[in-house]
Length: 144
Image (cartoon, helix red, strand yellow):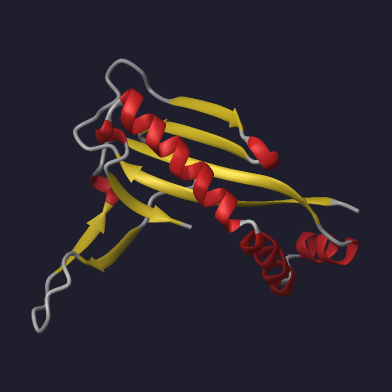
């Protein structure tokens, strides 16, 4: 039975930070239950940057939104948690062919362990915020 990788990602804007002394830093941590957490600090996140519009505050009858364009940011913290899971031969072969139904099957496997990913990402973000600096993880831009 082949293995496939499922995961979860958080991207933070590191407010007021820049890469003057170091260009990039990547850490890898083996967590319980077979989860691997990778942390990236730097200007170019591994899975890219995104632009989208979100509500800034929930105020009735007042349109108040902000456009987040993280491409203007200079420094990011990216937390990626992933795990190798058993997939059937059919799903693995369908993934290699690029069939969208196989992605849905893999997503179902990922959702079954989503809570483990959330706990691992919370733990890593908490350690960074408490032992490093809270500016590294204060503004969440995206999670997928």
